Image (cartoon, rainbow, N blue to C red):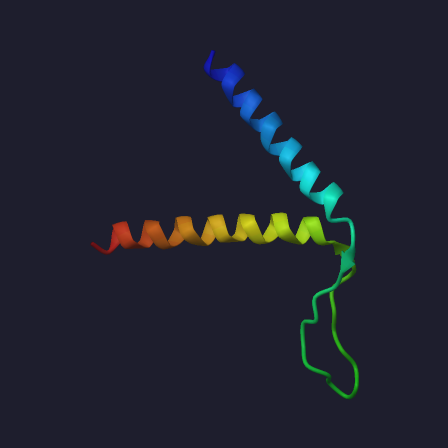
Length: 74
């Protein structure tokens, strides 16, 4: 039963991620540096939904690490 719930949760998460990417298909690029000699260094264009998912995962990771460090240094 536990494995079934884990698979169902994974399927639900993948569905939500796919839905976010599908709804936000506009391409965006991140500007990495100010103009250096008149040239901007940017990332390759990616769907906005993918940036949203990546930002969410980075936020989860940072929150987890901060909480872990708080517990270690108590």
